[in-house]
Image (cartoon, rainbow, N blue to C red):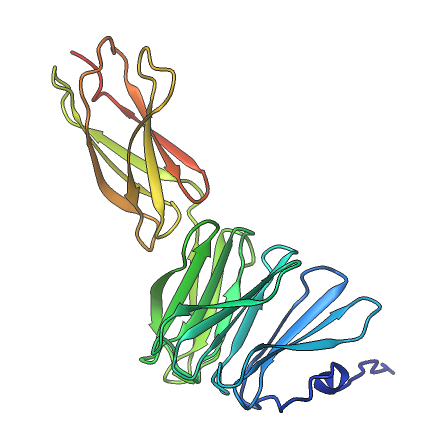
Length: 301
């Protein structure tokens, strides 16, 4: 006969966090950023956000990371630890804004807003993943039932987009990143169906370099690409010019929410002594990944 070895205790009482009662409709989230620690967050009935944490060979301890009135009592809550010295927690305020609290080792908790009031249903769930150490992504349900996505890359600001699908404004939401190049999100539709939205990073950057007919005056370079970091920047350089040892910067383009850009144009001049083609190099500003293409625009006839 199997023996049930599960044990249970009241975490709020054990951690000294008996100030108020957890909302029965609120979410709860947890991470283990290192093997010797666990951390749990929940929303109290008064809208405060609470944190209980444990370290090996120590008792549970408790703190409040947001005061009463900071969160909807019906809000979900999500958390990630993208690196061992860091944690981020998200929830929805009563005004429909999306709030973020973050912590770094040897520092205090700090807060900011990643989406303004009326961005989220106050009854919505919220989900988050960190598919790579330099990125975090968060999803929630909008007031109109849209599915909203906010994403962050190291050294860049939060950006937002709307992913396909329509959800119940009371829907919870879940997400995973099973491999670094993929994310999948699930939510409840207005008809009670379970909906799935998924994303794959293109395995290779694709660069299309078009060049007009070369002449004494030079030629026009027109560049398009896909597979780059979404809503970010791609920097362009030219390599292989005679008597020039350093790459020549020729500009940049902004990618859209799918990681593509179109119509970056550069008017090249005939480069004195250039008889071979040159190389256009596109560098993803967020990841450093590079794609190249050939151009004859600098070649003198």
